[in-house]
Image (spheres, protein in one colour):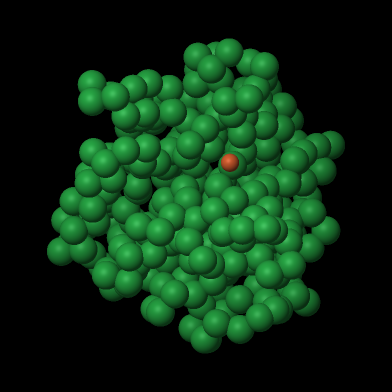
Length: 281
Ligand SMILES: [Fe+2]
């Protein structure tokens, strides 16, 4: 199984276009929060409509998992906590989203909402407790914020991670936690796109503007994780202990060559040309 992970697209439509073009190469596409951007000049309701259209097209191509981030919160619950109501709606599209736990192949996934108050946080705690009872050996959490005090949450001057997540990881020891949120982490000294807390690999894609988005590819058949950013690509061996720096990629696998081709907009059509892309040969 090969998973494509992106986060923090922040309503970048060229990056959503790229995602549609890249999706046929992957068994699962994971969007780890902040699909929308509260600072955009585009009306929030319009952003939701457009992103839901992209996600609908994406779900026609491959399995899709989406969690909310702090930029995705469009309503307050009856108790007054901010929530991403619109993300709950995308389950109608067959997309796994906030609050879901599911198994794909031999991997369990748990998709956590952004929490803004004690009620949603306690819901996550219950969700993890329930999912732990039914987990496959390989268990992956999708959680927008990375853990506190990790290079994956280093912003250059301080850490921006989630302290409760650190406790949950210690308690349940999932195989992986997939995050975004702290945009600079992979690009700052002492920051990183990967870390390991005990048995748990932790990832943060980071953010780069323009097309394509920075992404992580998890290739479970190869037991490898790849990080692909503008002009660089790195690889770590998921069977090996944590070691830095990550290796550079000398022999790119075919899917990576394909991604390099679609990074050039001249090679792909805009979304208005029918939406669903065919697998590039
Ligand atoms: Fe973000």
